[in-house]
Image 1 (cartoon, rainbow, N blue to C red):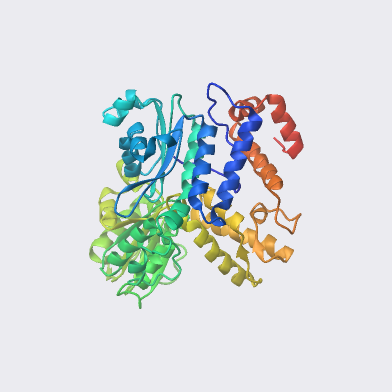
Image 2 (cartoon, rainbow, N blue to C red; image 1 turned 90 degrees about the horizontal axis):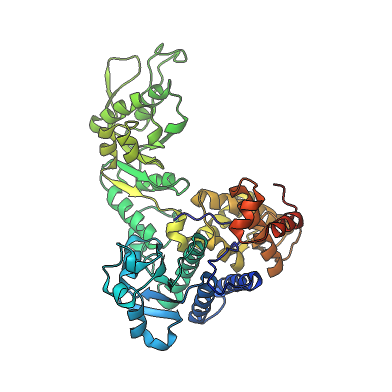
Amino acid sequence: MTVHLDIMPQTFRAKQPRDAQMPTQQTHLERDIYRRLLDVRSEADSRDIIGEVLTLLVAITGSERGFVECRCIDGKQRVLAATGMEQDGVDNILTRISTGIVAETLSQGEVLHTTSAVFDERFNQFASVRRASIQAVACAPIQPSLGVVYLQGPDPFDEEALHVVERVAGALAPLIARDVLGRGSQDPTSKWRSMLKARRVVGRSKAMADVLRHAALFAAQPVTVLLTGPTGTGKSMLARVIHDSSPQAKGPFISINCATLPANLAESELFGAEAGAHSTAVRRIPGKVEAASGGTLFLDEVGELPPEVQAKILEFAQSGNYYRLGSTTQQQSVARIIAATNRDLDGDMRDGSFREDLFHRLSGFGIRVPSLAERREDITALADSLLARACKEMEVPVLRLHRQAAVALAVREWPGNVRELDNAVRRAVVFAASEGVSEVMTHHFQGSTDSPTPITYGDATREFQKQLLVNALAAADGNVLLTSQRLGLARSHVYALIKEHGINH
């Protein structure tokens, strides 16, 4: 499930139980969840916070019961908090919920939801489901495979409630890893870092350990590597790490973005051209393939290669042979190919826009670079690293990331991944430096420069309410009636909020 969030957590309209909560009560519950999430870095007893957050979450979503469970290193289940069934004891808790749904959630690594488990073909074969006649369930993984947030009730959870559950599970991940399971001092990436020149790669998550493991194994062999994953995840950096850690490290690293190649000049750019081969070739032009000999040729956005050039890249990848444009003399270059794409090459292959033989040639040794949503526990470390680099490059005094800003960054969705986070950090540095403060606060990421001091909770609440309304209006194409329905507010109230916040729609 992809969730787009703003820098401050938004106020979601929860599913209304039969005894529907008053809007003000619901708002207070959401505010309290936000407060407790902000406190996770400052209080010693994190399990108390987990219990309070779970209680608030159950109230907001209108569920009957819920629990937070983690998986210890030995695989044993550990119930950290439960509500609606506390009196039952741990053993009985696990008989009143579906351990099968929990296992399926951990296996798939995504939120599982059913309106009625007992009638759902995915789950009704589980004995626990049949025994307890379980109805609606929402179960979100606490990544990476640390445990789950499990909610159960008589009525279906709406989409907005699922968003809240997923985001809370993401915010609890670093807390549980560090304070409950004691994994904060362990770095699963250390073994693979020792085999790589990966100084600039930040993150100690299991997802990054898997990436670095593959990079270390592939770097040592003269194989073609395909890097996949969403935009802005750091595929170019990883390509450089593989090159710098390989036997070709002393050779050149030649990078070319295939998306920027003009179709009529793509062949010339890659393979070179003889004088007179085209209008701009007034002399012999060396290509990127020739320049990369003895090193690495990095084909970024390889899915954008023109079809006629794909065949020539395939030939070069297989044999090292190529022809300059306008020449009949075969040339040879000993260069390793690393390719990267954010496209679905498997789908492009099926629809004929990408050659099947080239796809199979490239994808034999593949590494998927995860999104920030898949390694949320790395976000704070990444932000700290990007902050230090931005201060150095901008030649401003060293700034620190305030803990509230760190929590806000960690719970926000980053569709542009590291690239988007980097831009947000640089923008915040500009605002913070202009105020002469020593810490980057949450309002610096919002672009607010009216106050040099940390914003109050009330200011923050008004800001994320405003941003929620802006996003809701945009999603509804400015339709106030539709916006009011989605937010669970009266239309007159939405108009009043639009006026209060000075929103143009």
